[in-house]
Length: 496
Ligand code: NAD
Image (tube, rainbow, N blue to C red; front, side):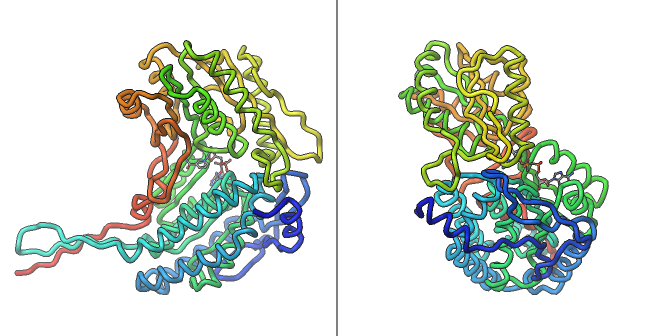
């Protein structure tokens, strides 16, 4: 791992792309408009980035459609596609420090997490999807002997991918890797808050041999570029990660246009349940602190609702406050920093608003509180914990997407399950117990796409990621992700 000084030195050597990437060429927005990309650590300007809109969407869609129809990628032998994607993964590995640095500068997440998690995970996703693609067989159905019914998987066509800013490179790669491996042409619209790494990897994609028009990147806002993609008639599939509010809009846009297939990875308000029989209160407290303060709480699976059995609440709170002390907001380029600034002023204001509402609604502040923002000094929030919270409070129901934890108590297993499920979301859940039967029983009853037992946040490319209820549909990662970027075709052949 580089030192703080070495990261700063690298910063002075890299140049950041700011134009859209269409048909293998960096291109300014047709309108000439740009938006400012700000470093949340010191509020300095990183780049003036092309602000794409409908005109750019039309250009990119035409290029993607032409590339798809030509078969240059969609009809390439899978093992050849695999080799190109592997070469791309090699290039990402070669540039891993640069990619880590770009996301840290762009959205404020800690460089150690970028180096330890985001970049290796992204490269792993790409390698895994690439490896799968020449192992995806079709089927022959057991029909009557007069027929041969083939079931094959085909690429979908032009796929639009819209991503958030909290794990810029990783959220992009979880979608583009399987979508490209399956042979689709792609238009990616990264978040306007963190578009820079997507532009760099597009350049490396061309270098690796991905043909022009197959992978396009349109930086821009949701209500312009994003909406135009979602309404476009030549886009057959839309894969999205972001808030549940926007996920709902995308379903409407699909209905208003061509009924495009919509895959949604949306918001969360995940519960953490600590039972009285958890084997190690300190380990559970550390796990609970990690589950809310990792990445400044800007994590879809952040456990922002904590339920602790009333008999161990006091001991647990001592351990939780101790564990929280290790999260000291600081410069994310310092490898020792575990918590950087919030992505922008708007997000800091959102977090501030929820803290103020929690205080106004009667929760007790146990740690942190309203941020001490000073203009030009970065968008830093404080690790914040409230006790005496209840489900009637706004900050217990709504996703905050910041380092704010609500602690509540329960007395029975049934009550814990009922409280945990009392949410419109259903993304992740973490339970802490030493009772194997309880672990299975509770996991089954939780309305959640993912459950972690005596841990939180573990993940692997081989395991699907996603939620239920307002947290979305479909899954990223694993075979399940690859399947969602293909269409099933039946071909009946008469043998008579
Ligand atoms: P967001 O919904 O505001 O934006 C996500 C993307 O959608 C951005 O690229 C944005 O420009 C675009 N967008 C916004 N309005 C649009 C519109 N009208 N039409 C088309 N596109 C539009 O979310 P965000 O603030 O970027 O990210 C935070 C959210 O993402 C949180 O809710 C978090 O839980 C969620 N998230 C979910 C997962 C998951 O896997 N379930 C992972 C990461 C983040």
